Length: 597
Image: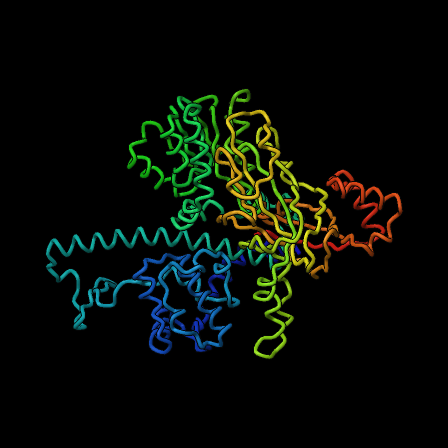
């Protein structure tokens, strides 16, 4: 299906049809959050919610100063509760303060109800108190209902000044909401494209000679990444993650002698916390770069802490900005995402390395990262989120399970669920790796250490810090917990303290019955999504080597396997070619595709 269709007047792009659709949405009836009743105006709808369902949406948004994205999340949260609880929502669930978990979950930015026209008018919602005078067409209406023409009024100077301030505030609010609404429109449009199976690359099917097509081809793919980092909440979550923040602080402060007098580049500086660590550690100059609006607050943070003579903040993409120096001595960056590579920020850090880091003596912080997998039996998660649909108040709803195992699950997985060995999939040397290395296909072999059911393969990562560019013994150590880490290095392992990255769980379509000593071997493929390169597509092909399966392998193969199992060298045998040519060909395999979003 193409992004474009031909009409009598030329090419009709999806963008043009989006605008028509948006206008139609504005004119549609808005459905109540709790019941099927619909309204033509958004104020009427929320007045109904307040009087009939005791839910004062406008007061909640006004008192908590909720902006557009927050309002969208609230609407989708309440709609979801209404569907799940048949509109019988306990009042305690409707007490909203802004600290609720759904404010951190981007799935509540996706409309719960198809074609929800209410969402597209949330930016126009008037949150002012009804007792304030309102102005329209040159008249002012007061509480007593009397209408008087403005030209006939002799308002005192204080009232005029107050109105001017109000207008200025409303103008600024309108600008902010307009930008947020535009971002949200792009977000919904991209989701619509994905649901229709339209890829970003399908526009190449249309003749390049068309002017409209050329313009669209020149546009960059939809990317809400930078906007998502413009708000306080996400930065608070990261800074409060003590494993993360303490790790960077310890690396910098424990190496003050090295940082003293050095020029430092902070890629994706956010609030500026790492830049300020570096400045306090004695750096002579710190360049803090970020393409998000958060940099304006970072500037204020730097000034407040009297570090503006050391730290220079630059707004822009690292690929596009220039520095007033030829090379820097140190690059620090907190670039890691879920499963390490989600958000693809490492790509930008590698660009910064190639453009700005001293190639001989420059130091990267962190200098190495590595991805691990292990096998788990997580009965609690399976019962709460998967098997739940087998019996819902006496009804079977197994259809609801469809798609559950296509999305990778980002969650904190308890350490006591592990039933296999831990295997390092890959490690990245940040001094030498390239962007193309971040897409990889590798074999793996997990040895079962506890009998049970293998529900999922779980991924996590470590990062390592050192001021020594040469490989050290630390690079070969697998961290079981943060206590094993040195010099700021840290792990997101299941057996360690939880972080905001959590772990990434890949649920198997059918749990495997496993015994102690069984092997789960396979091929793990990880690559950027074609639809959105900041997301990840994962393909896992796997097979269970138990006692029965071993009988189907040749005697020499079994002897080799048993020998290597005894000395712990499974990886010497389970190469990609061996797994594909011998194990999969003889025993068969299961392949699953997952999306990390």
